[in-house]
Length: 526
Image 1 (tube, rainbow, N blue to C red):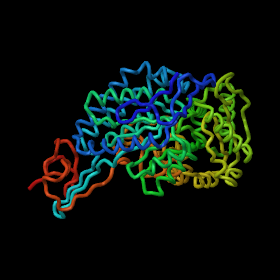
Image 2: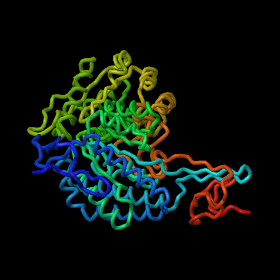
Image 3: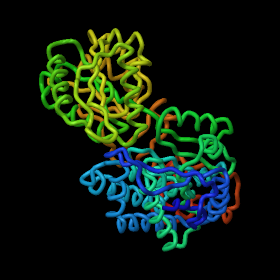
Image 4: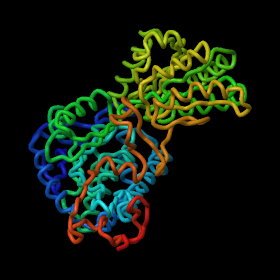
């Protein structure tokens, strides 16, 4: 079969380079039939040129037009739901139902519609009007945005369909999607939906473009190109840091989601009160999707005692008995195996003895343990991410040691503390929580961290290395939009030359604006 074309400036056209690659079926390990191109700089340059023209067109476009496109995009995705689910299952081995069809696809279209509503209403621009100083400012499009999608959420975090794409588009930026090599066919179907929506709503042709793969050097050149406004990246820590170095060297914003072990602290009173339920919740969370969630509980901190011993035995038994799942790719399998080997070499004890799946990419369900004192001797090593069906249990001698462990943690997306309802854990909670709070983007109580609600109050971010910047979220409209916007200020600019959001009349009567220190939906009074 001939190599699939790339999408540049509204046209599917052959890549300039003749290099190509094949995705794999994770359930068998065999390569799939369809070939996809490895683009060289000529394709990147062409996409950037087209995106520059599109960005200029989008800057003068009414927010209603952008909102109409985002809603049409969601509609087109739903028309292709069956094909998308089938293709994603083939390329990722994720279950068709409920995971893909009933959870991730509706979440994806919901994100696009929430982004459309935010674009149409406009409060995300945070318009600020100081009539005395003659100053007015708001957030505005930053320019073309490149989106690198991850392997584990082919829909909701996809390079042309997911949260980064929705946020960038809502701000009025064109996007250049760099597909994840694990699911190029799925990304192609989303791009086809985007083109149909672009044509239906008469948007600039290069509003959405798609490349499948580049060399590492061209990827670094792309994120550093002066024509690019910003980059959104979700993926491995190593690759992300190389892109960040290239972007940082020229001052280009890049928003990263890299790695997270999502520490869970379970206190003795909670185990006495509901130990069986917590053990079951832990196993479900740790093995769901074969552990391939960015909020998977990778490290669990317990205090020495009989309650903890019982909990560990319950989890060990369940991990051993549960069948090992399928991993997303050969690279995930290799990375997981290497992470486990690193933890064991550092002194972690393996508590399980299961087997991998009979075929495809797989690793045995793995539960490791280490004492608190051992952890503190090499905290960086014991925080090695083992992305997949592996969890490390750290048993602290007492609350003092647990506090010290929490203080030694790197930045994470989430952190959780289980405590009882009778108050026996309150003192320990009050000492551990302040340390954990500074290490995580989202602090949970009494529930496992797996899963991310699409809510305006959500923070799917956190301190490094969970992300590249602790002040931004990848989930949650309108906050996620600000990553792909620039703050524009106008000083003494004549009223008729101001953008609509900063003129005296509220452009739609619904936008919230800060006028002389007060939030209001009213017009600016004379």
